[in-house]
Image (tube, rainbow, N blue to C red; front, side, top):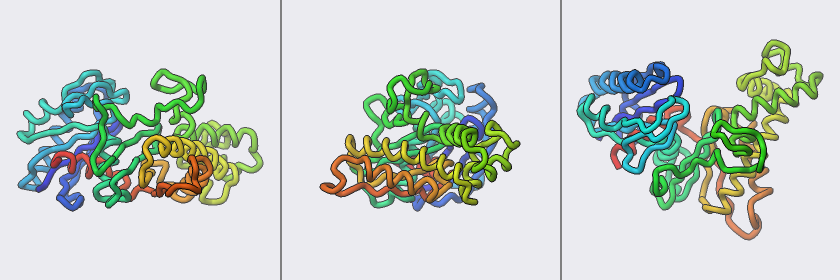
Length: 313
């Protein structure tokens, strides 16, 4: 059975026709047309119709959206990056394209994609952790996607790790994503570069010569070239991520963590300090099997593949 997966983000919408082995057979994308819900739904419909026209036999559509989705997998209750509140998605898209539609949180969709066809294949109990602008998550427990009673499970980026700490975009203080995300990496690199300018020459030269000119790509490229301050930024953020994984292991005891998202593309620069921190902070490490900490395999396609496969479930 062929299905379509849609990954709706704040800046782009990507779609693909996916077969039962997780292969993307046709794909398309467009910029997200701002925060106008009607325009976004129109763009989703246009993209789905275009890829369906290339692949006869499509049976259903799965849509991943960065936000809370109701338990009926129909309405987006809140999507901050899109400015949506209680926005119906399933019914208008289904009416437009003439196919069954399910709606899912984008991190859940990516987690399911990795569980079925990526780094988590064959693992019954897995936690996906998406390290991007913030921290997203998805739980696959007993081989099933766990959504919670009201569809809002696995918002792990908003676990409090520092009471009264840094202000988060959610309105609370001290959330994990303020210390272990892509934004945290850039902030940390800028702070360290300001303190250790002589050692941060590679990273500073990639920007405009000031700490404020450093962005995420600069940190990764500089670390790959051995800039000690950039490496130190990855070490600090990796420690925070590992601490969070240790807490999640105490709660859910998974077989594996799968680390995805844009920041994970730094590979061992991030993976190594995460593993060290996790193993140093997990409860009773010598008396229990430890979860594997793996890097995701599907990259930016995880959301498309996962959403498409969830449309079959």
